Image (cartoon, rainbow, N blue to C red; front, side, top):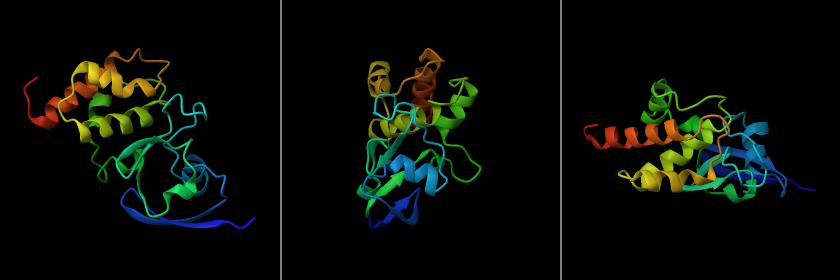
Length: 160
């Protein structure tokens, strides 16, 4: 079967790849493009470990066909930092120990950034609701929620 030729933008850079009609975006990211930050936790869109943004919308890359990337803008965890400078969410996750094993961390960070891009002043309930599609088996979520709330406050210039 003929492969599809896809032109897209990933983390701000033009990208081209070939894929079968049935290839998921997660498989292409990890296996062809070497972007291994997104993880396959469940393969059914239930855990959020493979979260990316597609034209600014949060999606599970395990549920997205790679062919759907044609002409789109994709951002992965690898695109959050600016060179050696971590995104404020990444820095706050480190400072507040909002991670443990690391499987869910990339998806949590991508989802949290998507939230703050849409709503820079979320309530704790809104953060919990937004991140409900990202499962973590290690942290208990409290440090993750606190890191997102503290980052939002710092990015707005609010006093803690």
